[in-house]
Amino acid sequence: MENQKSNSSLKAIIVVLSILLVGSLAFMYKMSTDKVEVQSELDKTITTKGELEAELKDKIASYDAAIAENTGLKGELEAERAKIVDLLAQVEKSKGDAASLNKFKNDYRRLKRDYDELMAQNNKLKEENANLTTQRDSTRTALDDSKRYNDTLVNQNDNLSKTVEKAQKLQIINVHTQPYKERSSGKLIQTDKASRVDKVRITFTIAANEVAPAGTRAYYVQIIDPKNNVIGDKANETFGDYNLTYSFITNAAFENKTITVNELISGKDFAKGLYHVNIFDKGQLVANTTFTLK
Image (cartoon, rainbow, N blue to C red):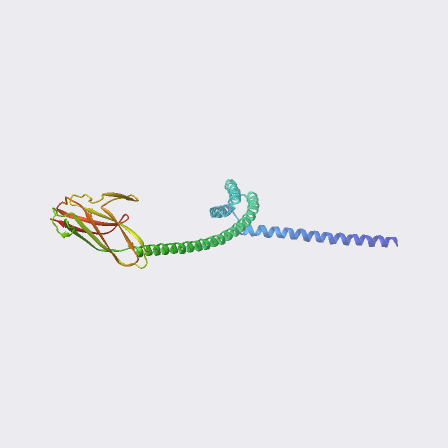
């Protein structure tokens, strides 16, 4: 009876050990098969020292291209590239025997995993940078459009201001001069003989202007004789960098309607020749004419 129990226990132990042995063998086979498959994939493409060197050089070129893109992983890429360069140097120095080649393949397999991970990160950063660049370009385009629009408005406002300013300028027309001899009675006799002239009348018209502001306008009249001398008051006024010597000032009460300005200037010893009459609105010449004395 006891022998039967012992035999049963022994059989049970043998069965358990057999199961464990089979499982272990199966696991070992699976691991061996996986390793063979992984190594076989590499061996399919790399069977000689020359092929491994070519593969390593290709990876170095890929690292160079990725580093040039400057995506933010430059430091990591340069470090991994250095490892590939070092492995290539070792392969080139080796004799290319099977043992060395297998060792280098294993080293390359590890470095290739790092390469694949870095390239995946690099591609992701490139995509993100491309999106940021697109957003930046869109923003820049919008800003440029806004600036151009603002510049257009500024130009339009400047042009409008210049148009309004131009429209408000008063136009001086019908400038006339007439030399006279004044008699003792006060009567003025027209003459063009220099020896007799002692008065010169200057008349001009300010044209009507509805948009110009009403008010008193000062005009500087300059009369230059044939010797290039200013006659009359010979007063000076400075407008910015321009210094004006004038014969007299006339003030006109402008009320948007056409008005005629009439001024009489006295003098003596008028010279024969051509006289120039210039009318200035501040420092700007707005009208002129000439007359001649014989």
